[in-house]
Image: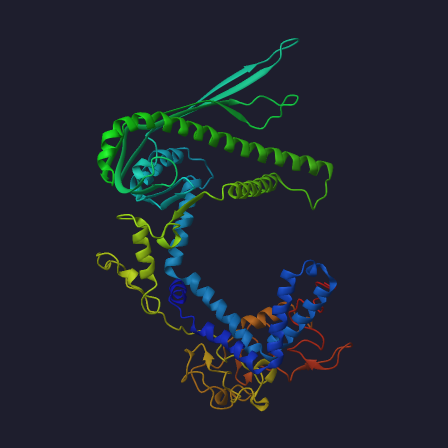
Length: 593
């Protein structure tokens, strides 16, 4: 995943970003106060998510303000350099994502696609009806034709009477869609006066034909456990249904309005359902009773065809009624919510039209799940299962010839083998490795960062110093991360003093110009809410000829005195004030700005 993200980031290594984050982890391991602050953050988040009503209490605001102020003191004070580096690293990675040539090309292509779909040659928004024709005449037929095979998982059924398993059901993509679909509508409207009532009626007709089927090498297992005759069979057969195949017609009309003791529950009522099955052929290729089946096959198909048609007609009618009833219930629930909102116009309870329908749909789906659980409880002796692998099967000891689940189980077990992330599953097939792809660029650590590193003369902005036993070298982090070559020695490494306020010649070993004119991202954020009015302009906190500029934001020698506060550095906030804070010192939250 890391390599993939680095490819999208213009082949930029994330090692610098990871090291900057790891540095804060090291700080927390060595500083009990910082470690305790992270623990308090974790506890606060858990209380916010787990304790009901905690976020609405005043003590949650007080606790958050204290946590934020302590974090500001630690992360923007003692460990300012480390947090500045993390912010700059994320900013640099974002810039590399924007600079990636392939990302730019993809964004331009997507933008051009939507412009071509919704705008004319003059840049005006316009509806293009020929696109709908392309969708129905070109795109959808191409999808059905090019989706060659759709495998169906192993289907298993068990009840006290019979056990049955069907496998190797592979539907061809060309048979997924019917060859013909017809829709008709008939409207009747009557206006009457005096003793003649007004009336309107709408009838619709949906006709589907040419649903074909060509299922080959379908494996099956059947065991009749009760009744006569008791039979067990396992075999392979082909099922073919060509020509007009399966067709059906559904006729509906608008439902009657609600009357006394007869409430309306549907938009439509199904008046007629017809179905037909033609050219159905079954060829038994392997069976324990193959001769018996071939003898009775003509009689069996003649008896089964009308039964199958009646079952399909009932299923189509029930499905249409269920869908229509579901839509009517959602509409009724949404209308009830709208009427309730009119009676109680509370802004917190008012929902727009989309929210009302979404809530009604969610409520109806939950009711459907509860009904399914009740039905499942009543039919607990009946099991229906669709197993992708043999591990999911309820008949683990039944293996059918050429079963898809057997092959899927083999591949799943193969995927768990191998060393590291690679497994033998990647070597399936005989195709050669693609050689026409462009050469992948090498992931590298690119020069970036601040010329002077992320330290200063102040111990507060570098972290706990060597004198406190945390960092063995006072300059180990100050200047090793420079724009002269990323992390590493040779360029931008201090000679022993780091940036300690001395001359530039003694501060940097080489590779950094005398002036930079740049300012770190974290400093710019602080300047945005500087309460002392002494925010340094961009470029004023760069490295000058005398190390850190005397008017820099972190210069502890430059001081100022106000009527309410004693002398304090001009580059830092006054005591009790912060440059950037969401705590109790924020002037906007306190109403002072």
